[in-house]
Image 1 (cartoon, rainbow, N blue to C red):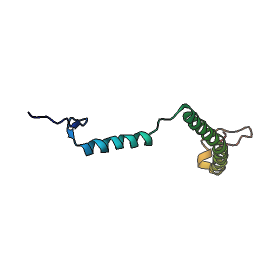
Image 2: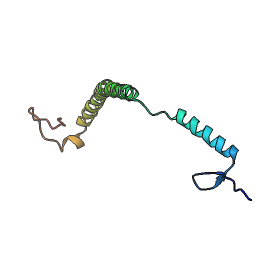
Image 3: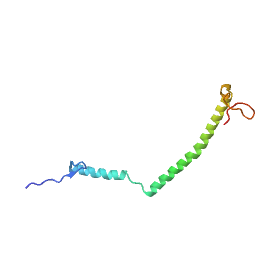
Image 4: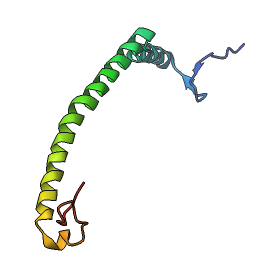
Length: 102
């Protein structure tokens, strides 16, 4: 009378030894612990932190950045208004002077 072994099968259908089965079960337990699914509370905390960071970025850097850019543009306009080759193509202002007006 012959008995046939009942070896465990992997997802690909290959036979697995007892050692392979044990290693696979340990690996699955470790992966389950390492990749916990976020709870509603955790997700709410992350969303709150993200919203706070986005709000801070939009308010502080935007004001500083805009002011710095405006100063640079004003400086550039002043330099360009000194060049007759640029201002000859501009319309005259109220005083009759051709210059860049924004």
